[in-house]
Every structure is written in structure tokens, then in C-alpha cells.
Amino acid sequence: MKILGIIPARFASSRFSGKPLVDIGGKTMIQRVYEQAKKASALSEVIVATDDKRIFNAVKSFGGIVVMTASHHANGTERCAEIAQKYEDNFDAIINIQGDEPFIFPEQINQLAQLFLNDKVQIGTLIKKIEDPKDLVTSSIIKVVVNKNGEALYFSRNKIPFIRNEEDTTHTFYKHIGIYGYRKEVLKEIVQLPVSSLEKAESLEQLRWLENGYKITTGNTEFESHSIDVPEDLKRIQHFQ
Image (cartoon, rainbow, N blue to C red; front, side, top):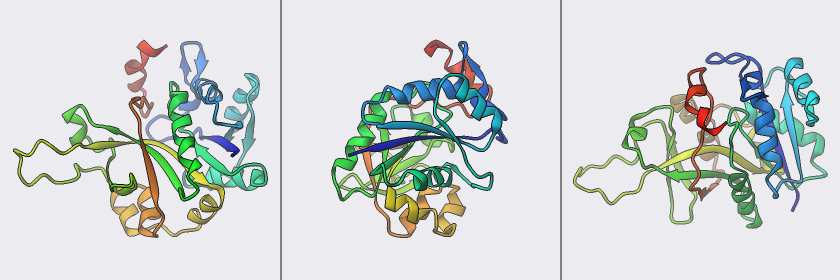
């Protein structure tokens, strides 16, 4: 199986404009993401997808592969779909690697890729057991419940499930690690779906896929996610540099 890794990267961001080009220990964030992704043995190729010439030139400067995409895309999934269409004859699946995780673990990418060895998997993602109770009440940390087959039932910014009896401490809560994999034909289909009511309610695009009957298979990772959403997050990841 051949898997293409795509890193969507845009310059404009309401919370942190220009963050792909922010300096982290002497390298831009996009370079760090790219280099980590290249370490994943499961990926046949890694491409940065951007609509900004500054990012394009930065990736070219460190020898990375980068492709310009349209500027109208609403999210990284749509940007991935544009690239995937150009390369669809060369790959079986696509992994969407978040461009704001400069220290993503290659093992996470490989684990996600392994899910597609099962030909029934349509969409894949990763989850992690919640250890810190604060995560349960933090809306930016997405919670997920899964069925016995490891398929996602629902994602929410709220604590799910609701524990009716607070003395019941046996339930394991999971948070979503925001990396996705898609079969190429599934990716082509899901970007054609209209925005759904659940997606609007939670502002989570994966709910659109669930609402339309697609299955999202999860893998349970032990690695933490360290994304950069706002400038203050740079202080939090200093010890990784």
C-alpha cells in the first residue's frame, strides 16, 4: 500500500497569523512538521499544500516538496483533496498531518497508516486516554466515544459520556488526536458533502462524515499531541526544542 502524507498550511489564522513560518529553535514550524513526517516509514511521500507564496518559498528553501492550492478551501481536508486528485493514480490512502504540530511523533503517523491494512477502514484517526481531569472541561480538547470495534460514535467539545452516578469512576474517557487518514475515494466523496447540523453545532467537521454514514476507525495512541494554536503555546513546547 502506498500512502501520501499531506501537510496543509495556510498563512492566515485568526488566532495566530503566519504561524507556519514562526521560528522554533532555528527552524520554521512547517520545516519541523515536514521533517518529522519524513521520518514516518509508512509514508511513500510527503507534500506541503499551501495557498501562500511565503510558505511555498520557505518549504522550497529547505528542500521540501510543496504544491500551491486554491485559496477558497474552507479547511485542510479540502486542501488535501485537491492534492490527492492530482496524485490519485499513485497512492491508495492519504494522511492529513496537522501543520501546527512541530513535534508530531512519526510513530503516530505509522500507527494511523497501519489502520488501512484493513480494507474496510474508510477514515482513520487517533485517540488517547484522558489522564488530566482538566481536559474534560476544556472545550478546545475534543472528546470522543467509540464502539467495541474502535469506531467513533461521536465527538464533542463537552465531556462525553455524561456520568449520571458521579461515584462511578470506571469509565475511561478519550480525547481526539487531530490527525486523519482517508482512502482516496472516500476523501473525494466527503469534501462534496454539505455542512451538517451537528458540524455547525460543535464546529467539528468529522461530525459531517459521521452524520452521513461514514465510519471513522480509531487507533489508541500513548503519545501526546502538542499543537500550536496561539502564540502563548510556544512557551509550552520550549522543552522539546
